[in-house]
Image 1: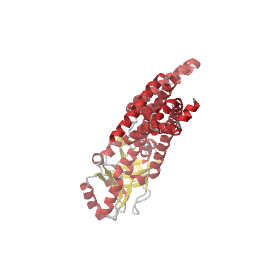
Image 2: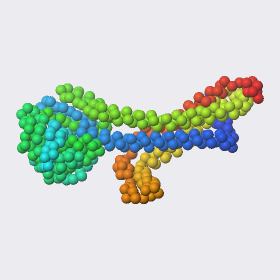
Image 3: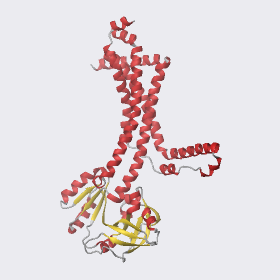
Image 4: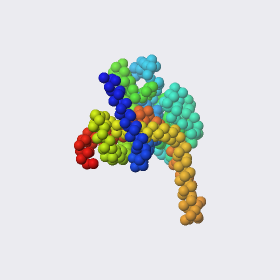
Length: 434
């Protein structure tokens, strides 16, 4: 049985190769096949580049949110006597990278210029910058250092500092604070010294987050403030399993995954990515229609050969497989170059944006020089391209594999649909038409 299948495959390959050799001499068939392969190549390349750039933009937000704001799992520990047991359990768990205790409250900050701005005040351990590598990576200090060892020290986001008119060494007052019942709502005695200003990949964190030490949090947030823990795990996609483990060992503890903490935001990013994927997939739809029409024309042109092969004993399903194999070859010849081009462009995306900035500048400069030379002093490079070039493209292997196989199998399916006409042809019908 296996020998029969192998011989049939050899026959299909032989006939397909002979057809390709004849088609190479035919200008219309050759051009149609090449255009189809080029279309698939551009579609695969465009999809890989678009998805990689989209991943780079989105992951810069997601990384900043999960490493600074939401953590992978947030734990609300209402049982004070469980704190030490919980911390010990986290240290022994091999899947947990760090467990950071913190307090947080809403506050109204007043700067040295009497500017006011609302912010989320989070109290963290003074050594969190050393114990949490993810936090350290996303916390890019643009002025000063992340130092909370000194009493009444504060580190704030760059946009928040700009709104308050603060710099390193400035004095900031937390005028209003949403602490527990034993804390004054308004006070002019909560004065902090700015020791550092940071910037992250998410603008909302830069404009609304400020950090103080855990000791200052205990002092100013009140005795009844709820101590929380931010859990970082090795693979943030395993958050649900960690939540189950915590629930099994500490039933009274409340857990919240990063998926639930920012569900609306992450959902919006996912919808945006899916819509972009759907729009670019339309490229393959156009290519499939082109392949389908080309294959139907080829079947019509090959009607005599098909009739002869059928008369000699070839099964129609095998003859159809000849054209399907040609479609698969067209898909492979397009998908492989598209894969190589997409990976190359994604790796060098920073250079691509810089080149685009220069091309736009020279075009704008040339047009302005021809029609309005007086405005040449206002022509400059688009700085947004420089910002885009600073965001690295991120390629996800499952997405790339899906795109490549989708490109190949779209051509395969189009060829199969076009080849169904072969099953309806008869020898007498072809001879009658002749």
